[in-house]
Image (cartoon, rainbow, N blue to C red; front, side):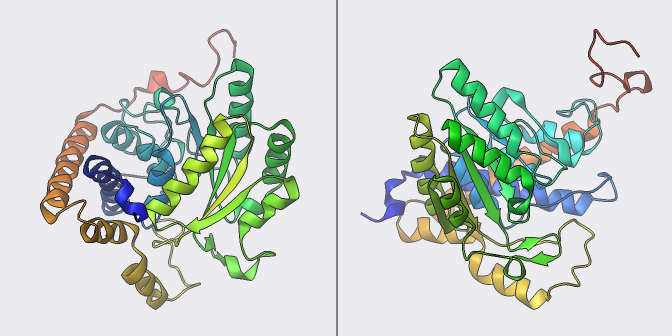
Length: 328
């Protein structure tokens, strides 16, 4: 039995829809940026298989921390598209009441502890969440998504070292998209695979093709299960590629568009998954059309919700900033 045939049609359709939700959300953010959506935004296009593959193994009681490129993690973890758009539109119905914007999406109800504008900002939050899980004596886990650039920050060492020492239930998922802003990974690497850094902490490290949803899902399943069983942390490196610029208006003078197009042609994670499902007879063209239509319907309703939602009032500017018991 090949790996993909372990999926039934219902699960395969759900995984495909989840990736399509992220892709269409990001394409819409790009189209509306500078018009209805103001402020910086960092797109997740081309990396959808990682968030979906990892989060497919999680429950709402498990935690994830994100990055400045956090829309995909938020949606994959189960957050609603309408409230996510409302946040980017600066509306009061958004997850942060329209005050956080693109880099601060969070939905505690599904265990999404927040996107983060600080590079490497999620390491210690996820490790702290894992410590809280340990103290509650549950078998939940925490997942920290981070980029190849963030792996060289001091917070990476601090968090992983502590988690390894205390055998905390946390999985550090590196989305190695080959670019730390404008710096190519190959120009600054000290190892061929970032997962090799796990050896320094005495924990498992695995590298997979981050554009193969099945490979990501299976590797994450193994590492998450061992964390649930009290076997401690691990590092999962997912090799992918950042299709868009570091941010939406990035001129991308540091790389050629020929390189980008070549990658898109052969490594788009959604196309690869769909082709595999067709080949294995798990999903048909009709199934894909059904899922695509459902995503478009959700997208349309979400945009209508965001556009019709009110803006925050000026007298609400300091709400949720200070503790209710604090005095100015």
